[in-house]
Figure 1 (tube, rainbow, N blue to C red):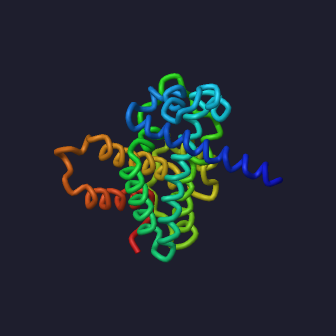
Figure 2: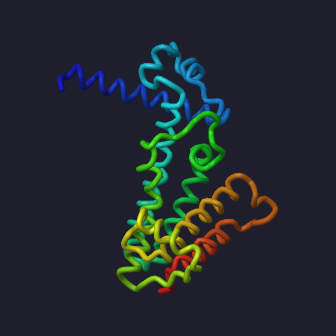
Figure 3: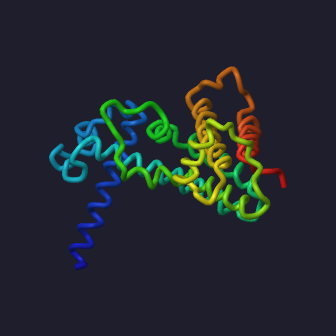
Length: 230
């Protein structure tokens, strides 16, 4: 790459970052449904036609913001997992859950973008899947460590759920038993339900000491997946 090409690439990266940062401010002020390329261009002092060279449509800009949010959340979960590498799997699970909650509280608008109401007229493409899977892969890894080490004690499945649980295990983690896969999916959904309830106000006048409540709830979710106490 020549010096001129490198300078152009850096300029493009800087402008792309500025566009996304302006779009995040718009998300905070107006919500994802009202995201407008023209409004972003006005804030940056750009003509709309120039912005379209970076993001040809609102949906492409939304997709970039969604991938960034999932990646940022995934990085937080992975850092918490790595920092807790020397503790038992159940404690590691709780540490990752607390990191997810902490990220959501620090980035409420990005959290709403990926786990809030769907944006009318937008359908996330397959390119969002790897980033979206990062948190789930962290939890799968924790269960895998337990399964290969101290063991899992996931609750037995009713007969009518076993085929679906086996399918989930085959798709998500073939080396985990179906009982663990079904429990993991349920716990994953409940985790984001807990975070969403706190973030969007459903715990107002219900839960006061939310950090302690969340830590207890996360530990109970770990137990539901078969992670035993050390």
